[in-house]
Image (cartoon, rainbow, N blue to C red; front, side):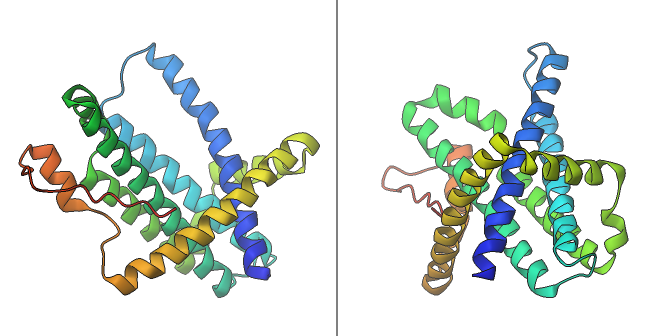
Length: 219
């Protein structure tokens, strides 16, 4: 039960963080005045988003244990973060497959916004930073992450918004349980989490007629 409550709490935290970050991205879009983001800009923003999500998640691990690090909570938080990031990556791979089915126009557009190596690199960096915080927790405390932490707590305590995000947290809990179960199944079957070869074949236009798509999402 404690595990379920913990994942549920992280779901609420992730949902509120996503809401705050969405407002931030709207501000960036206004400043760009409609200019399309480059691939580099897209992944720089995503890297910053993931790094602060990792930071905020670590702060909530400390908060749950009154500033004492709980190995159990850290391990679970790390698994939830990794599952969340991989799920995001696989969602984009599914979108890539969908654009491919829609024709080359959609595929060309998707190429501009998806880079498998960059996606994996961002995830590796984010998880590495989480591990760094475990060894050096003082690095996790900075004005921006503390502001996110306090803002999430304030929104969570708001009657209406707090209730809405708790509903989202419940569905996040269900999603995480299914994804973790599917991940365990993948490990037993020996299938890869990320279909790298299929993606590169599509990017290079080298896919044979008898090849098939195998984009799997941890749902």
